[in-house]
Length: 95
Image (cartoon, rainbow, N blue to C red; front, side):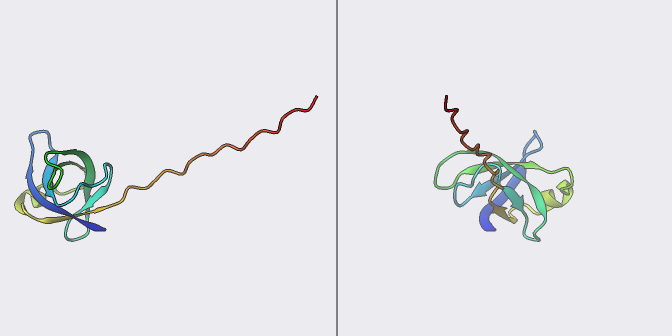
């Protein structure tokens, strides 16, 4: 897990807005300081050095606790990469 940034507020859409120290990968899973899963990185916007991040919260995340702890440190893990389905070559028919 890498340090992501600090939480700012919850927007009217229900997404958590945070200020990051570096640009994260989209789809990365976000954890709070207690290592509880909060949500996924939804959208990155703003300046490239310190961007703002929109985090789509999981239903299991405690939003009241998140609202009380504004400025909390957030961490991100890399999203799981899907295995590529590589097809083998078919042998040619020799006629």
